[in-house]
Length: 175
Image (cartoon, rainbow, N blue to C red; front, side, top):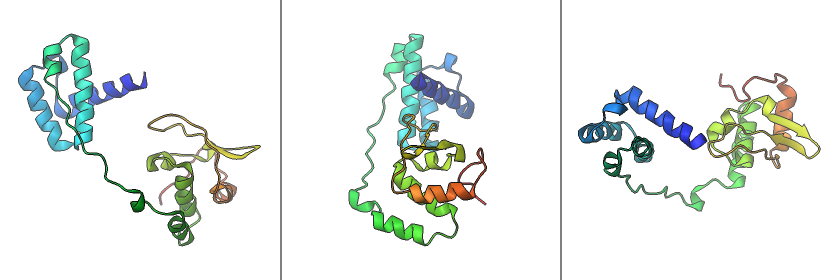
């Protein structure tokens, strides 16, 4: 269901941002549409648009149009293990943080091993105390919903929760 919702959202973006009328698409229209999309977006995003449109066209029975849409081989990120921050480097960042929120943000991001936008959307209510410590309800994950327990970030998060009693405010608010 989530995959279908994602494809529908991409199709809606194509229609709104590029004035595409999916019911009137022909070969020239598809080529023109993706020439505009390729200018505006990165290759991975272009491939996602192509997959969504191809899926839609097959669903409509327009297999001839769907077969002309080809995704490109996108090079994977060339990030190496050595490029990542070591734990001691992260702890140095935490030690020079300017306020009580920033160390929690940094160390929690490392502990949860999730995307930055997931950590940034956590609320105080997402941190639940239980017999094992503190469990985090990660609901807005791109991949899947999960409930990890904190380990080495536990003292930082406990301190932050003690000084931030508002249950529904965003945990890491800028400004």
